[in-house]
Image (cartoon, rainbow, N blue to C red):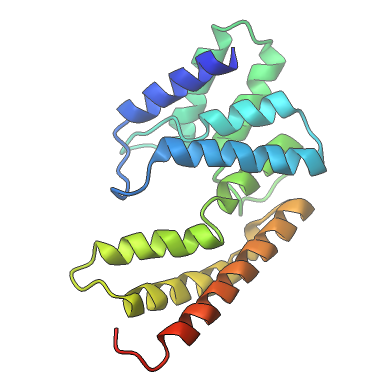
Length: 198
């Protein structure tokens, strides 16, 4: 069943027309979010099937007029309801998909939803932040090492302001570790660039 769902998600993401940076593959992001969700579930608990499927479906929807999580929740509901999942399981997965982007919303979310929120947020934090900024800088008119460094410094400052959006204790620990790694990489990059014209 998992491979069937995986193929459905791959096809839907490929067809949904969501704009993205040319170097950012939404399906690869989805697979990384699944891995983060599994890591978090291992330490936080929760229903692994719900978490894994919600992670797979979290970015499946897109519409210019409506929030992607709303569209994704509808697609998720329709697909899983036709695949023999219990209504309770479908409801739990759909809830997580529908709220995966509501990190700063008040209210009580299920453990599975909180894990998905954190897993989605953790992707591209850390070394991947530096990779993202490197690729983004390369697409600018005047790419340089200095441009990467400056962009990544901005990303680091922003990430430090967003820690409060991480909802689980394990997610907070992973987030702090990833931010510390990025900070160390940037300190090393600053040292290596010092005294050179870029």
